[in-house]
Image (cartoon, rainbow, N blue to C red):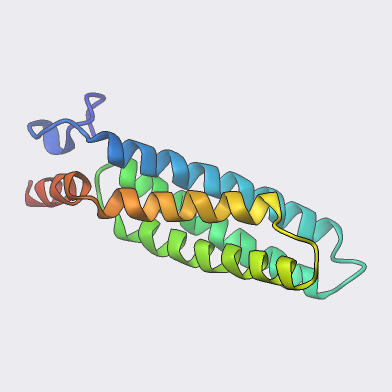
Length: 137
């Protein structure tokens, strides 16, 4: 993709919705990677944490793949799918934290906000039109 943000060289400029969704995808991936590192660090004390670490690493890779795909103008679906799964995992973490009496945790709330934001931005009309135009080229 040329540095102008135009897919295929002659289309409309990339809408800010797409750029912000890509940034949200990279932010999600960064936070998920940090959670995976913490999970692996404490997996010696609880073996279940290693499984969560693997889950978070898979989500990290999916968010990175989706964010790159979005910013290159290829497709928004990988980031939508990765963000949807991340949102479900984050919502589950929020619910478990509240039910255990710990209140609302900052990290799951931030992950949920980023995931929902990326999905909403990619489902907006300017994003859909831009991806449709880039597919036609």
